[in-house]
Length: 308
Image (cartoon, rainbow, N blue to C red; front, side):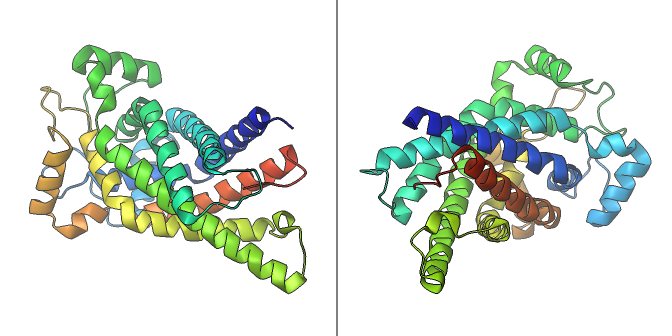
């Protein structure tokens, strides 16, 4: 099998995994975004007591469609992100490896994940910005909401210019690079430890086939927790900087550094972890689903096993 075909198998598996992740856990993503922008000061957004109250309130005031606001751009962005991520991540690993059989060190896994994360962030930031804007729309917000992806894109370009599509790129880059690097390094190392343990236990040579779906789900969830705890403040900063300007055209935050200063001043350290509970509830099982789907799709496309 050619090397280029292997790379497209990784992209396909990543895209399928990304779609499965978004489709199953999306309402919690909406709730997380609403929590992230609520800074405790005068705001157009409703206040929620907890995750359950947020889901109930959104459903009551906006209907079920409120829990799926921005779903289409989120599916698009997630599928593209994971597909591109796995594609470039696998290419980077192959480049760092002197031959297809050699196991990479944690440092090389970290470098490969960071490289892939930076490229993904540059490609998908406009889609994530539109997704965030659509998620934050509520009956209490703008007098003229976006009607969909195209209307949001057209309105943003007309009212704010093309540079607005890259608001939050700085913290977005830090999130993608650091989050992906931590998650994938943890995943690869935990995977190696688990495979080595099962090889010793079963005295088998075929390490690539030793792990089952439950193992992949555990590995994906554990690696995600580590990445979230370290990088979550970057997500809060990005979400707040991507908010739509008020009706008079004045943005709530001028840039990412303004977000950092205002959050630290008015909310302290806890402000940088607003919405982390629904984020963990969504992303830990979602990551388990992502890696479970990814590994099983990869096994289907690459039946001879994987070579890292």
